Length: 312
Image 1 (cartoon, rainbow, N blue to C red):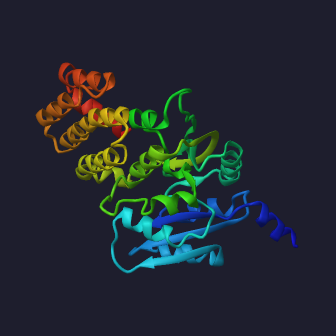
Image 2 (cartoon, one colour):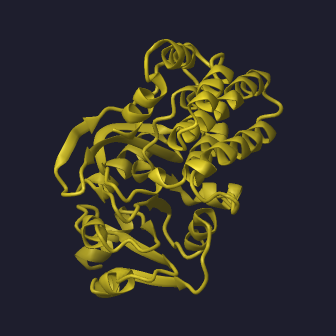
């Protein structure tokens, strides 16, 4: 047995899925961060969602290191992720978006941690970079408080960076399709909360990936969709957790967070009075939302200040 074959026997195959829609700006750097992993047994599933830029040309420059697949029609992000997952052969599956990048030891550290702690899925700490690749925050430490159910912890303080998420193929076999086809903006939030409904995660404290903050991000363009997709996701979770009284009660309360998203969208449209009403309707979700509501009505230009803070 060759050294490579022996290493592959010891290292389960990991499929890294990258969905792309006109992602040429940072694509070479992002794909390179997968290719340059210290973990060797990796396949890259590059699924192009009918791009009209040079994304396919950039991906093809990596040769047989990247398996390229294309859709001839526009798909929602949920549909595109599901299509890509059907092509994955790995025992474990990870994701990377076209504008972010992995830490060189990301896969190695997570496979070791998952096996050590006998978990089927996990996520972990990450850093942030700007559009030039300069580090904004070297490391954002992610953890779940001790003696706290991960579902409760993530619903009330969601902090899963999708580029750090990884799971065993057993989950795909049990819960497929993982992503609701209806979702265009937040299928990743839906997936993480779905996984937390069934399995406790492994939370790796090591730096795993870098999230890029830049002007062209999808989140700045899709405020109209977030409120409805958040409600859709909560309703999905209510169905999954309908036999768990504690979770059902919590989901009922956190459904009101949709009014918060409505408020942010109203500020973006310069509808300040509607924004204040949205913050008011969301005030009973938690003490933090109550304080946001007070700030919006008591501080001059409060809603605009809130929006500016959120936009960074």
